[in-house]
Length: 124
Image (tube, rainbow, N blue to C red; front, side, top):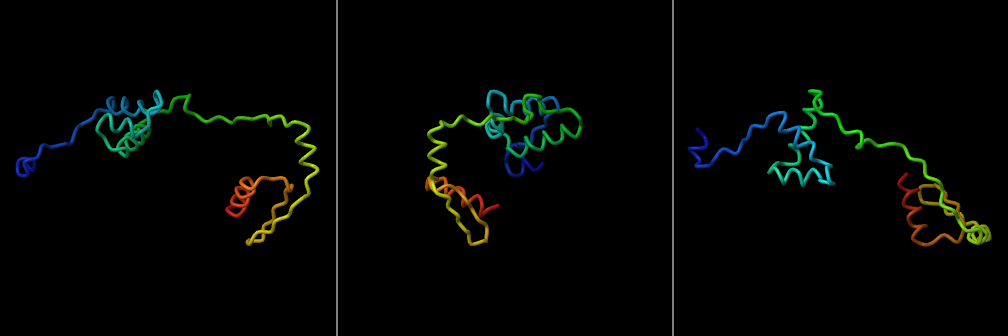
């Protein structure tokens, strides 16, 4: 036997589907990440992903309804009228980027916001 020759104890463990299911279900419970669950059970992160994939293929694991993403409509935050008037009074600025794209905005935009906007437009 290989373990006897090398003097090492065999590390391979056998897990039932019920045990795998219990480990996979721990992910997300009380905010537990895959890494935390894997460390708790002395497993690799990829093992948990593989078990989840296998259990789904067998029809034994479906994500909880609480884990689903749902569309959300957010109402815009109210803007004070004084701010609206000040924004409309600021001159329009047109910026032509190296890639030929153009940004048109009011001159009152902050430096950080403008830099973020330029990065977004260049990356699009």
